[in-house]
Length: 121
Length: 108
Image (tube, rainbow over all chains, first blue to last red; front, side):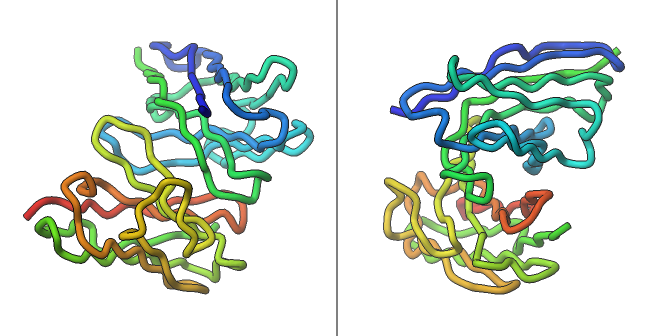
């Protein structure tokens, strides 16, 4: 059964950094594009923030995080990371690790349970 | 950027009733690259529909999607107690990938 488990969340001050990781299992990781989607507190709307292709060569970012966040993956370890720097109050959210149905131009088929990131002084 | 507008914001219905949710795009969603997700309180979103009308694995057939271009609809033919949740549409035809603001289906 497909599983995505996020780790690395927590509280950080504005301007700080945090690295999220996603451990995948139950499927052939290197065949699927992966993504991060976040949701502000109170289960407000969903915001896509980044997608990485199955091989890692194609990457997309939302403007809100471009230049501050870096997505990466290790197909040998079945894992994906999100390095977040220059964090702002508005980055406070639950971050979901998500698997696309196949390529990057497909729907989000599986979601992790999410991990909380809080940016506050 | 494709902006998705969902309506209504809240739908108050009773179990057994039919729910009709709308998602309108600011520009054409080519190839019908439009998905619907359900999010129950405290849970991660779940894929219901992709390609505007294809049910995801394990989704009951009371859920159906339709539409093309800029107007899309999610229909729940007869609401079950577990269907009361927030529903989001999402386009994946172009980056940035975007979601609608959501429709909450609540028990009347």
